[in-house]
Length: 150
Image (cartoon, rainbow, N blue to C red; front, side, top):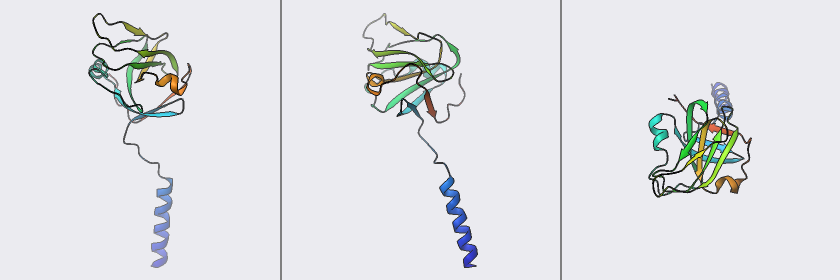
């Protein structure tokens, strides 16, 4: 009986050792740096984005996910914090950047386009992309369930 219990315990421990940890907080990794993130995957969440926020933690981001690959442009209406806006193709490689984009204080607000079609757009606190050395072609890794994109 003791041998059976020991064998069962060892098997259970081996199974735990091989188990992958589950990540409950969505995150992205870019150029070796990990950021917790919020997903914007439908029209309403993409339209609202980071509007009305007074701060964005240095290790936090928002990832906009679109259902297709198209030229994209963002604007900063009602966005109170400066941002880096990074555009990624369908393969999640960086195709364009708009850095140190200021908040829009009065209409009309300028738009900030991508230089190439994008499917993913990552917003980070302004200055982050330069600080971590992001370059065109860098790949974005996404942790968490993006879910249905509408």
